[in-house]
Length: 350
Ligand code: AQP
Image (cartoon, rainbow, N blue to C red; front, side):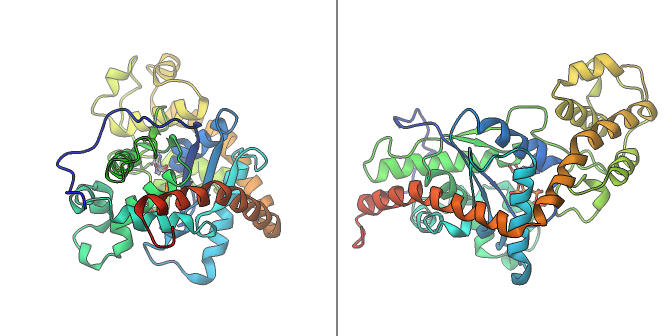
């Protein structure tokens, strides 16, 4: 039995294996612009560069109560969003987390590798649990451990996520390194890298530039949903909180103007350009002029996604077929990893 790690395990991984991308989204509500720019848009790009595994995180979803009769439908909605934003099921492996039991199996082993002190530091749990953590599920607390299993069961090396997930990825690396160390298996698991770069890494609420855009924000006006129609998108952009000053010439001028910075960042991410280029075009103009341009851009990018999701959801059997096929392909990678882990741990069934 190894003593708790005195410090975090870092350093280069001796892992030698193929690069793989892994990420997922919880089926816990309408996907929004933050999920799209922070995660989904990267999935579609990466699938053509590196073998890509994208799952719907239904095990994670039940860390908070989900209506059983609705959960399958919620999973299909996320799958439809993946497809509508450009994931190709012939290229990427798309599946539901609950269809690959190896995630949960590996998570148990990792629960015994991770230290309580490591989890105590997770700020997302503190944010979500608020003042009443004793009322939260144990699953919400150990969520980042399951997340580490999600990634490492595929020995994935790249994890495209929003900024809010960086800390969980660091924990994932610590778990991988401690497992490799404790079970004398150098390089068995890679130390995966979070891909958070880009202007969409942290999209803030349209009502409060200091809060992350989030599915669970009670105000629907705080976010643009993937399923919003053109009028709703335009209205939400026009109502977005801003300040009375014109846009500055450089990004330094956005200092202390969180709402202004957020809208410029959203424009840059949607247009596939940079904050500096947006400011070069709009410097000196007020939000009365800028917001309609942003609204048009958001409608042009998001409108077709919502329409395609609605079309796909008309054929749930086809979505189920894609998820079933993806689960078979995912298990073909995950099962051998768990078999190796069982041997390393010394399980009777290993
Ligand atoms: N505001 C955001 N900006 C950029 N990226 C974001 N992501 C979430 N919000 C933003 C990224 O979206 C991916 C999927 O997130 P998730 O649904 O699995 O979990 P989450 O981070 O908890 O998403 P929400 O919307 O904030 O949900 P609630 O309100 O339930 O907490 C992740 O890659 C995440 O980084």
